[in-house]
Length: 312
Image (cartoon, rainbow, N blue to C red; front, side, top):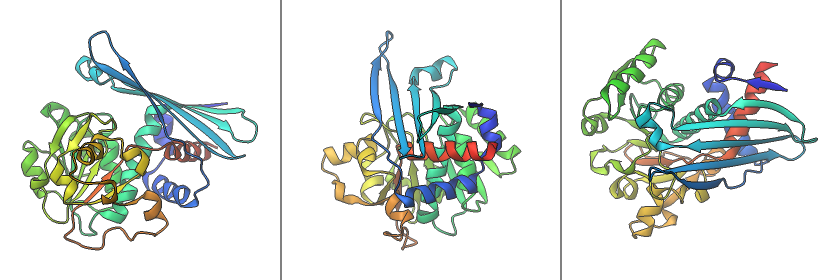
């Protein structure tokens, strides 16, 4: 049985290869990807943590399951808010093939899915990327997006400027021109693509800040009580999701639907529609587009299989 650490996974995976792998796996429609199980866990300090269980399999070939914990209060303790483990099995015999660092798998597949969506939804001439959030996904998200568009500059905004500066520094070291955005409103007004990866429970990006043609990539809020965008950002946009069932449970969609601002028919297409070319993606350079991602277990399995393939 192989055991792959975070560092080993980082060394074996590449953005173009993983993004292409996701496109192929989604289009093939041969992966069974059940809805994830989310269990809320009240904590002694009054906060709420989550346990997520995400299985997927290709019948007779491959089987994997990711177990994730989300403890948002860890950010105040200087600890990681998300911790995960990925277990990969033989789909024909059930034999365990590999135990992998789930945080690495999550970072790679989440960022790759957003970049895959941006292939279809971001303007071809997009030149300014804004990353909102400084957590575990921020560096991966910027690098993934930069692999599908040539950005002149990448800006990083965070509530803590020192954390934003640290992320910007890591991106600059990898050859990406990066700066720290001090004013979120101004940064949104000048960005072509905005990727949000925060655990916010209230809107932090407002629709009135966005200029026509902006692509908004919403990743952080996965529960009904969490939200990164306001009603205008959603209602004015052509809306795309990774999966309808999952995205409709996120606060970015659940809340405006529940209040009557939009209904589920506002969703134009999901990643399957885009990958199978049932929807052309962006057709108007001035349109607002939104991609709401909550993650799906198919992506984890695709990333895990690519990592194992690269290690042999």
